[in-house]
Length: 305
Image (tube, rainbow, N blue to C red; front, side, top):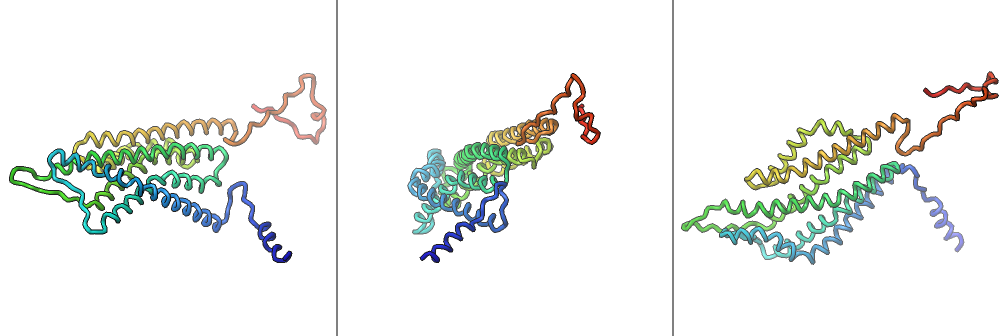
């Protein structure tokens, strides 16, 4: 019995200790990545169950643009093609709800995977970015929902109408659902991108002046993104959706420039962000030279200019 318990004890003692600096072998990195992905998948599964019970409420939100279009005299309905489509659609909607609700877990696991390789001050910054990325992501998702909700009645209104024309628009629900989810996720990711830029700046990868040099291209891409994602013909909606993204970009640039300035001042002082200040040498004795000065072998002290 004693011999059987000995391998277990030796196995426990042979467990590799965690490196305080966060260094791991490639196999350990892959193992940790697998565990993080398992956590994300499990969270999506749990939130998808929550989405199953929220299906009726979410379906009313998805059908709201068609109800307003029918109130305006447009015959437009959501269409389910086959007998098994209702169950299939409910499963898809539940999965999409779970994916959106699990976004904080995805952000947290991404941060936790990178955290062991960061310094102590960088970990505090990453935690702050994690806390700001979650509300920005959901604000972006809400913006995507608002865009589709306002655009659908306008697009359905382009169908020919008249006393001699009777057109019924049967829109495929799976196609409409994919458009809705893609738009929400696209705006959610777009609103999180400035936070990623600030994180790269705080890690010393992307300077603030480098971000500022690309402001023309970034502004152009923001307007192109909203022009593609906002299907309404009026330019006001496009401008209304592009301005918040441009504003978040310039806010990230401002934070990056301020951070670079503080980092430069710290480097000029000869200190790193996570190092303590070194006490200067004691002043020389005014009464006379020290006894060490009489020793020819002793190193001479130089006064700092």
